[in-house]
Structure formats: C-alpha cells, structure tokens
Length: 359
Image 1: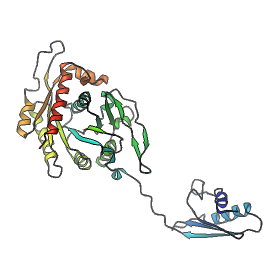
Image 2: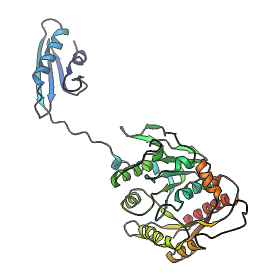
Image 3: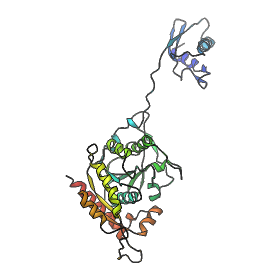
Image 4: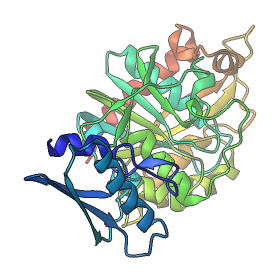
C-alpha cells in the first residue's frame, strides 16, 4: 500500500456541492501518509464552513477502509486553508515580446471617420509589401473593422497556439497579398455590432497587437479608430508606436479634425512624430477620362494643411471608382498597375523616406 494508491482511491470521493468533482482534482487532499499499517489523510477546507465537511470526512474514511488491507487504521485530519486567489492573466499582463522583432510601428490615424483611413492603411500595407518590405497590419478600428472585407478574408478565424507563458495564447495572423493581417472583425459574427465601452475597447486593441505572433517585420501599420480620445491615448502609451500618418480629405472643414489629430500626437504626454499627411479623395477622375481631374472637395487642401502644421504631404490619392470597387471586392487597388495603384506605391516610398529622415 502506497500513498499513490491511496490518492487513487480518494479520486472516487466526490464533493456533491462542487458539481460532483472529486476531492483530489479540487485540491482538497492536502497530504496522504502511509506508515506501518496506518493511513493518515489530511483534507483542507476554506475558512468559511463547508456544510458537507463531516460527510466528506466519513466518505474518505469509508473509501480507504473499503480498499486497504484488513486491519488498516485510518485517520482523517482537517485543516483550514485560505486558498490564494488565482491571478487571472489579463490584457494588462501582455508584454511587448511579440513586437520585439518589428522595426517600425506606425499608426494610421484620422481626426474623424469617413475620410478613407482604412482604405489608405490597407493599400499602403500592400504597397510596402510590393516594395519588398515585410509588413503587418493590425486593424485597431474596433467599432468598424473593415480589413476582412477589404482583403476578402471574411469568415477566416486566426489560429491560436500556446505562448511561452502558461495560460497565454498567441494568435497567428492571416496572411494574404504578402501582408500579415489581424482584425477584431475575424472574431465577430457577420453583422454583429461591437458595442464596447472605453476599457473593453482598449483591451481588445492591445490584444490585436500584443497577443499576435507577428514575427520579424519591417513595418507594422496600426489602423487606429477615427477621432481622438482616451482609447487613442491609451493605445499610443501602451504600444511602442514610432509615429503616425494622418489621413484627411481636402475640404476646409477637415482642418479642425486634422488639428485635433496633430495636437494629440504632439501632446507632451504622447510626443510622437507625425511622418506626414495623406490627402485622400484629392480629386475625382472618371474611369473613361483618366486624364481629367475634378476637385469636388477643393484643390490642394491637404497641402495647405500640411504646411500650416509643419508636416510633410506624403501623397494625394484620387477619388476613383475602382478604388472603392476594389476594396469592396477584397482586391485592393494597390495590387495593380493603374495610376491610382501607382499613387499608393509612391505614398509608400515617401513614407519610408520620411521615417528614415525623421529628426
């Protein structure tokens, strides 16, 4: 008769008040001692009284008597033990290990929604990949994740694998068009509205970046939620973001929104460089007349904004029907060779140059 055998017998003793789980798996068996025909079992109970304590003591004694050799003496002791609460590993425990091999983390931001920020982010990521860089994009726009649609990866669910730390899993990004993609949209049901308060949104954002196995990357673009606020400040403070690109439209009313974005990144508590401004929907060009330009939102508004705030104008992206259609079809326009496709390649080159020559 050994202690191991006794533990096996005790696995047959279940706790009726704990979903009929056995006392061994519940961690209630503190010690088993077998010595010269005597078995001593010590059970631990929490500080609060267990109404089934006497029942369990009797059940343990009966289980041992039933299987031990005849004449075995059985003693059951009880101790009171206050189990330490198990610390749950939350988002606040996520470290920076998974972005340790990322050379540049760049935020793609806008002062408000509706300016085509995600379209620019997705096409910029593909353009950088076409230039030979290793690229990832984290879709941190938790209220309107659009990467799955724009890359035709809807319905895909990133696989998870165990991390180095026990209890932590790492998500494997979806790879397509030479870019590693991660989005909260991969985990939401089609049509499901993501109604989250600030703290929940912040947690989701950090998971989409810090709990992902990115590997070695030259650039990790972060498609940030539109606007400015606590979520953005928390994200920038917790992620080693090198700087940002601001997307706007050319009309004068966008000036106030650009100013908000610039002031956020230049706030002393954040203090991140702005690599430049992208003027989206700079002009309209009909498909059948590619040489024509109609400045329906105003001309050179982005250039004026960039000059006013002392930042560079990285690019002017035309309003072309094919850009919208390509995004909806999951085949971003940056994959092609048309003039609008080449505009994103030029934008990518200018961004790389701005990063390499930042003061």
